Length: 179
Length: 179
Image 1 (cartoon, rainbow over the protein chains, first blue to last red):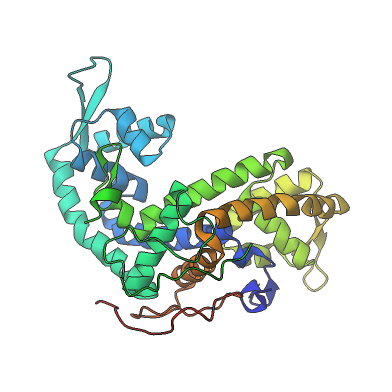
Image 2 (image 1 turned 90 degrees about the horizontal axis):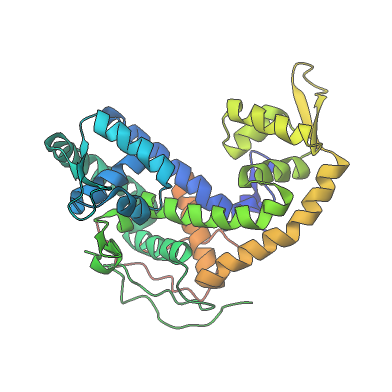
C-alpha cells in the first residue's frame, strides 16, 4: 500500500507515511521550522507566542488558568513565564481574589512586541495556506480539531464545519465510510 | 472570527485555534499521548518506532541514511541508536562499501518486538480514524503531506489524492478558493 509515498530516496518507509501520528509530526516540524525562521528576529518560539496571546487577550488570568488553557505542564510553564518576565514582556501581580496566586499581564513592552509580531504571523500563515489553498486550510483545521478535541463524525465521510469560511458548496452527502 | 472555537472555558484564545501551527501541535500532542499509552508496555516512543520500522524495511542502511530519511538530527539519532542497541533491539555492523560507516540491522529480538507492536499500532490508528472517519483520515493525510512536503494545489480548493482509498466520489470541481 502507498508504494509511491512509502519511499523516500529509495528508502522504504513502510506504513509510516500513512500513519496519522507520523505525518502529523512531520507537518508540525515543518510548520514550526518556518515559524522559528520568521520569529527569530524577535526571539519568540511558538509556545511563547501562544502564552503571550492568551495573556494579551485575557489580562489578569492566573498562571494555572493560562497553563491549563494551553495544555502546558505547570513545571514547564513556570520556566517559560520566568523567561518572559526576565525579558520584560510579562508581569505577575498578586491576584485580587486569591492572595496566594498570581495574575498575569503583558507589560507595555510585551504589548508592543505583540503588535510587531502580527505581520510575521500573517506571513507565516499565508505560506502555509499557499501549500494547501484556503479551502484546504479550512478542512485541515477542522480535521485537526476533531483529532485534538475528540469530537467529530464517528464513521462518516462528512466533515462538520465549525470554521469560518467553511464552504457551503462542500457536498454534505455521507457514505463511502469503511470499517 | 471563530468565536466558538476561540474560547475554552471562557478563556479567549484569540486567533490560535485557527492557526495551522497551533492546531497541528495540539493534535500531534494528543496523538502522541495516545501512542505513549498504547506503547508503554513495550517502552517504545514514536521516534523509536519510526527508526525500528525503517531498519526493519531496509536492513543494512547506514546511520546517516536512516537519520536523513526520518529527518532526525544526527546528534539525536546517535543517542537513540545507543538506547536501542543497549536494549538488544538493533545492531551496528561495519558497512561493506564504506569501512568507516556502520550498517544497521534489527536483532532477532528487535524483529520479534516489531511483530508484537503491530496490533497496538493498528489499534492506535483505529482510534484516530474513529474521530475523523476513513475519508477524513485520507483527506487529513493528504493535506499533511502537502504541508510537510511543500507540494500541492497552490491556490485551489481541489485536493489531489496521492493516498490509496482516495474517494473518486469526491467532487473534482475547483472554485471557491480565495486569495
